[in-house]
Length: 182
Ligand SMILES: [Zn+2]
Ligand SMILES: [Zn+2]
Image (cartoon, rainbow, N blue to C red; front, side, top):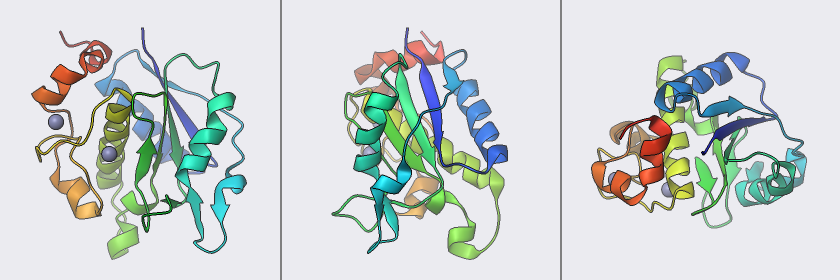
């Protein structure tokens, strides 16, 4: 049995956290739990970039979440990076346990100054499913209807589909078990 643990890291917006939790539970009934872990996010901060190094946060969280039996999705509000990119929406261990998603650049305010919580929720769920897909061994998919399509800018997050295509599901049958589908 696999479970998914949502672990907020230095999170303050509990309204959106709850919406994301419930949204994810709708997709994977009985498999999603909110959890806590002692993760010192300050250790991952880069002064030059004013961002947090996502790989460092993942490494730090591994021992802190060792007791959680399942996938761990860290959820952050601060901006994430890996050295080769300006920013990342998230990062995951391929065929692993850990992932992290940031809401920072999923907020519509970031681009247009307008608040759109519905859109934020939709984007967050897509990016969480995407990173989980990597945890289940999926690589990027060429199908724009598939949530495993890569997205390096927000328009690509909005264009791509909200769930896995049938080819990806065939490659990662555990996801069907999680969702309760046969
Ligand atoms: Zn990806
Ligand atoms: Zn796909």
